Amino acid sequence: MKKLFRRRSLHLCLINTGGCNGCDVEVLSCLAPRYDLEQYGIYFHNNPREADIIVISGPVTLQWKEKIKELYDKIPEPKIVIALGACALSGGVFKEGHTCGGIKDIIPIDAKVPGCPPKPSEIIEAILKVAPKLIAERER
Image (cartoon, rainbow, N blue to C red):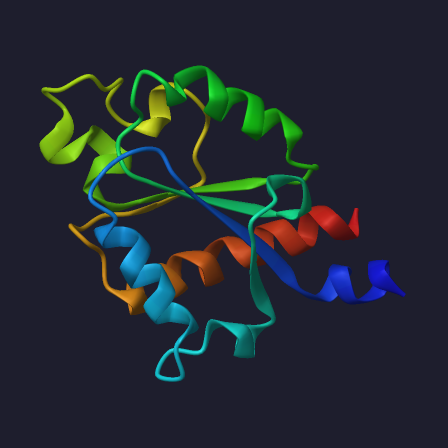
């Protein structure tokens, strides 16, 4: 029964690799009644092993560099990675500090959501753009 429902819904895991949490607040807005991400059958989990899509926010700090690779490997196939915000894409305002810059140099990303912070509508749009790819890979 779990496989039947899981096949029809998407599961996200939000990982903040350091930063100001501005993007995380906007992700929480996606769950509020105004945007209601769950109406599309998209749910958030804290466990990356249950996730289909990882949403990464914040610049990759030195402490997260190896951890993020390990988390990426734990996600079941097919997996999608969304880089959320300017920090995840390039390091943002933190790129001069103790960071490795953006996530694209560490793991492959499938979608980018620019902005500081990005709007909830842009976050949902990015998730819905990668959803057909994920569902098609699951059907194989």
